[in-house]
Image (cartoon, rainbow over all chains, first blue to last red; front, side, top):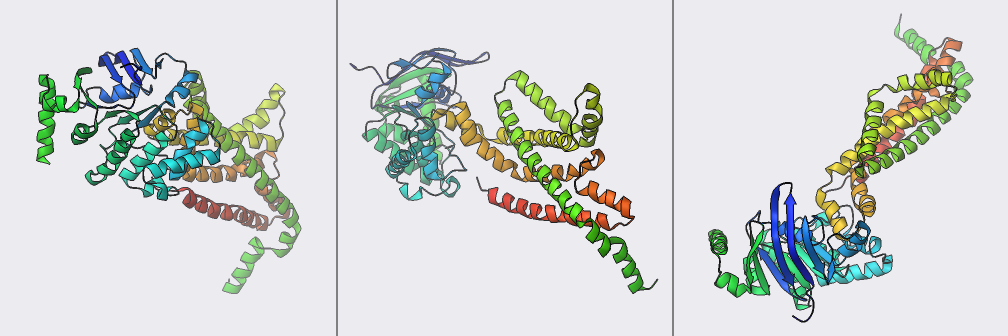
Amino acid sequence: MAQTPMLEITALEKRFGTVEVLRSINLKVGRGELVFVIGPSGSGKSTMLRCCNRLEEPTSGSIFIDGRNIVNCPAAELNRLRLQTGMVFQGFHLYPHMSVVRNVMLAQIKALKRNKVTARTRAMDMLDRVGLAHKADAMPSELSGGQQQRVAIARALALNPKVMLFDEPTSALDPELVGSVLKVMKDLRAEGMTMLVVSHEMAFAREAADRVVFMDGGVVVEQGPPEAIFGNPQHDRTRAFLSRVSHHAGAE
Amino acid sequence: MNAPAGFQRFVEVFFDGAIIDRYLPDLLSAMVTTLWLGAIIIVTGVAVGLVLACLRSLQVWWLTVSIVMFADILRALPPLVLILIFYFGLPGLGVMMSGPLVLFIVLAAVLAAFCEEIFWAGLTALPRGQWEAGRATGMSFAQTLISVALPQAVRMGVPSLVNRSLAITKMTALGSVIGVKEVLAVSSSAQAMSGSATPLTMAAAAYLAIFLPAVIFARWLERRFSWKV
């Protein structure tokens, strides 16, 4: 690849006390690429994702976003660097005391110093993009889980991030609500957004991901195009995980 | 004693018209004293409590230790003890303070101690994801505290804050032991002078006039600030 990758993780290590959660992780996400991270729970995939905006502090290693190392940057600069990564959480984490549109406006005003009119216009655009402009004045508690997650995506997008990080975005949703969130993610990909997604939505990974990364025990076991990982996995651990997951899916 | 005579006696003791006329002006000015003392105690106590809870959220050990000690000591001591120490003890060190000033300092400090605990309980009850959402969108610790965490902590604390503020404001009656001319002091000296219980009835009526509307306002406030998450 001629261009530098949008996100590059090199030799990332993370320890909680004496427990090694991540070991020598190397991962690149190219511009406009959608990379899916799968693996059993406790494999460190969420921790890796959370290192990418330093919600977790890496123990060592480097994380480059658009060529800039975000590890070891001073706290004052950290707030600015975090604007480059949009984070979507499993639990949505909308602010319950604010209307939907104010949720999307808040960080624009506080962190980007946009004025209220600009922030509101941008918020409405983003809400429209996730199909929720008509809910702008609702309170988060009045929305379904799927709608809340789409507002959370709009809140992250409003800050013009270079990379979107999704931490199990559909795991807390009822099955019939998952589709609307995945559709938004697919639209984002079509628009060229760079995305790193930790998720158990295997069918979606197969369909929409450019690359799938399998993690287990704090290391990247293998990675490749979805057809290779799902169709012809090279490692026993990958095969074991995929057969567990498909049995589980078959049983439902 | 027949019933009408008994009733008349009751009215004479507790609702003597002449006594009411004589002491009403004094009592009205005492009500004003109680009201403004209560108001500045609530405003100062709640504000200081809020600032202390914010400082505690910085998690700097010596700040935390000082704030916890302040909160625990002031919540443990009966306010009357502090009032007496400040009013009768401190002049021995050359620190002279007027009765109203002592009452204000002690009660505002006690209210601040309780409010700090109430706000802090709200802050710690907040899901960690709220903080993470704020920080992940590039907001600083202070911005997240002020825009995300505190508004929710305050709402969670409103019922306790209201109860505690009312309880502390009623303690302005303790000013009667250090010569503050608030409602209880004025009415009990009137009672001593006149030998009639009527000034005490007037005091009760005065407190009701102040606090019944406050209680009703508090109910409204609690409803206004409760919301579904």
